[in-house]
Length: 258
Image 1 (cartoon, helix red, strand yellow):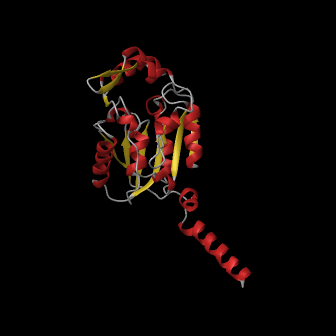
Image 2: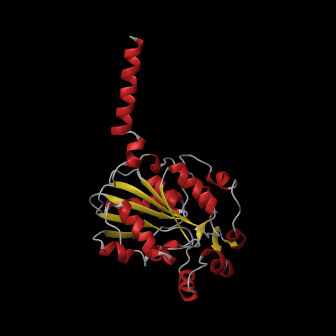
Image 3: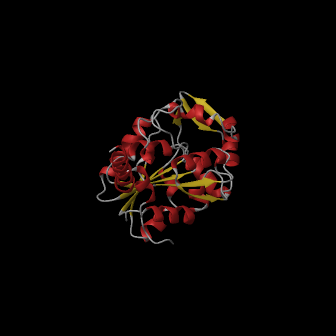
């Protein structure tokens, strides 16, 4: 009788893995999506996705680039959920840098079928992400972060050398002009859920990143068991390698590559 119960339990466990568990979510063929929501990170705005959007549109996807207020994680999640509410059907949610926290929180929405992290945070629920990050090298950008009236900005020198490095100077100057300050306590805000535990996830590691340690990125991608690519890029592969980023998003959307 004990053997019979053990066999039944094993069979139930296998059924859970195949039909309802996290392993199925990560290994399944991607659901074909109709939409993509792009979420920008700190010290940027929605225009940072401008070079990626045309590729996605050409593939027949409806695209919305969120404009985050960068005043709190809750505010940015609310902005992302408002964008999701405008769309019908399966949707891929994409986050760059800090926005990895946003999509980890907002990605539990039922219409979100896949998550794509671009050189991004990927916190677990309730995790002290700053403490986790302290286990990896401090990157050069941090020395250029300045505080003014409760908000953080990046100095011009640090922006060009460590944030938009590898980007043509004229483009980097445009990105600097639209730099959005972030609330001083923004990075300490904690998520309450980790959508990557239940949704298929993809990750882009920026191999030359001077903002978030590439080794930290690899750790996060590995922890998520994300499908991962690495690109020869600084912190902004969505600007320096838009075709590669678009191709990965299309893969997450169950679309044929570029």
